[in-house]
Image (cartoon, rainbow, N blue to C red; front, side, top):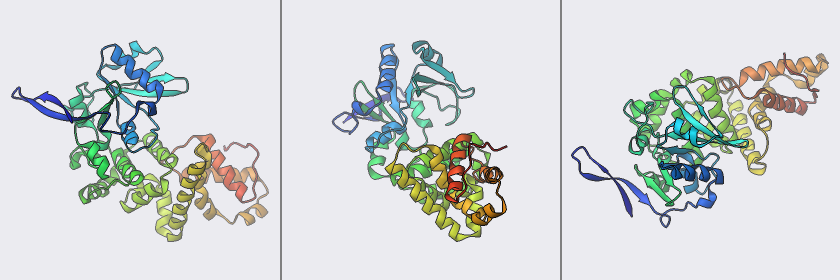
Length: 358
């Protein structure tokens, strides 16, 4: 086994990371997106350290196909932009670069210092960058040239043991960024990673902080859950840890009034996961259908509604308004929510012809 060394405050060399060689891990470069490989090789050619990082490394170790291939480097955003003409610097407070290849893009970030805490915005070294990562399973760096994993915090062993280990002190990890609560639940549920009692207790204690998160960030995280194929497990854990009420407050309110609604909702999440497993390419509108179906079943007696109101456009507009409010704070793409609503109405014998809600 190899080690990476750094210098301590006394000037002595100390072991700072374990290096897993290609004979000691299961990652193959052929399983990495070719364009992500191009970006890293090009950064290396310009003399910059660059690694695959985070969720991609975790998923590859778990034998899964990563949805995203994030890259971290010592190059600054300006230096990255000069190398890749097909790129754009984004973010005001936290600047990083998106490198585009046709319709897809790769997020390239610069090593950050931890001198201002885990949400600081000062460039730093890889040794500092790792201390800003949320959980050990997301703090692994993969060197594609040497085919080595650089592990500063025991992440490889934690993945083998199915343990979710926070790297930031519990009294800070969620107060600094409440979205980490959702990610902890997602990692634990989707991969059967165990959370110890202290971590679960802290999640319950800090769950209310999700009220401070912007709707756009919550929408991003909720869509990841809906698209994950693990919505049933994730939402079940969110309910157990008193978090679901901050993700879908209207659905939670209905659950508190009617236990049967909770059972029906979770059953629909199972069907959503089954649908994604059988048809991974199904669009978001079809997925959102499972989110609103049980709610719309409670809205009215649809047969009677149609007998009383022959104006299907008006029925659609009212249903749109109800469903739009129901899924808050999530704000999905309008056209996709329209598809979901039209499918619900069609189930109830109501056909709407390309009418837009007012």
